[in-house]
Length: 356
Image 1: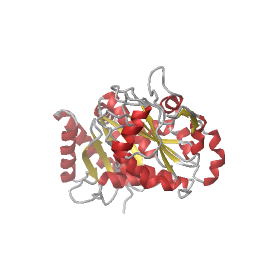
Image 2: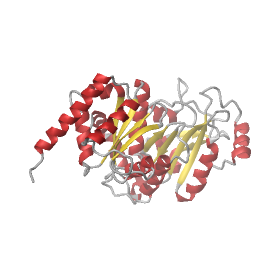
Image 3: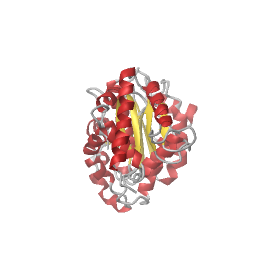
Image 4: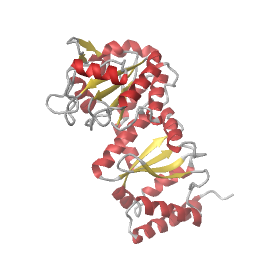
C-alpha cells in the first residue's frame, strides 16, 4: 500500500466506523448523529431539524442562480426525480459567497428555479458556507465531518447516509450525471436498504479518498495518481512496492499525489473502477493519471487491447516510459533512473519467486 493510502487509512479510522452501520435497525440511533441535530432555516422563516430526514439518503448542495454551474439544476432535478421514491432527498442551500452569484430574494430564487428548471426539491434560506457567518450546517460539514475541508465554489455536493454519516464530498464541477457520482448515490441507497454487508467498506469511501486526493493535488500543484488495487492483483502490490523504493519515491512524490482505491472489497470502489475504465479494462487498472482539472490524462490498465499490463517486457516498459514522458516532468536522467530501477526491481522479485 502506498504512503498516502497509509495516511488516508489512519485518518479514515473513525470514518469507517461511522460508515460500518448498514442495517435499517440503525434508524433508532439517528438522533445521535451530529448532522441530524442541526437545525436549518427555511425560506418561509421557520426552521427544520435535519433529523427529520433520518432514514433518508441526503444530497446537500450550495446553489446559486447566476453561476456558470447553474445549469446543474437541470441534472440535480433529474437525479432527484429518479431517486426520490427510493428514500433520497436533495436539499438546496442558496449561497451568495462566491462571486455574489445568488443576489436575489428568497421569492426570486424560488421563482427562478421553478420556472427555468422545474425544481421540486426543497430550497432553504440563504446560508454562508465560509467566513465568520458560516452556518451551523456548513461549520459541521467543513470543519468536523469526515470529509472536512473548504467549500471551493457553488454546487459543491455532500452525500449523507441514511444514518446521518457524511459519506463523501464532490467538487462543484462534478456533474449530477457523472457515473462515479451516481454510483456513490446508488451505493448509499443500497446501504439504506441493508443490501451491503457490515464487513464491506461503505458507500462513498472511494469518492472521499478521491476527493481528498484531488484537494491535496490542487493545493500542492501536482497531478493525482490513482492506484486501483485488489488484494488478488499481484502487480497492484508490486507497483505500490516499487513506488516506495529509494530511487523512485522522491521522484514520484515530487510529481504526484498517490492514492489507492481498493476495488475487490469496496462496493463503490468497483463501481468507480467500472466508470473510470469505461469498459476498456478486462482486469484491475494499476494506475490512472488525473490532471489539475480532474480530467484523466493517461491510463495504464492490466489487460485490454492497447493497454499496459505489468511492464516487465521491453515493449511494455517502453510504453510505460512513454506515459511517464507524457504526464510528468522527469528529466532524461531521472527517467532512465526510473526505468533502470524498474528493471532491477523486476529481477529482485523474480529472484525471490518460488522455483517451479
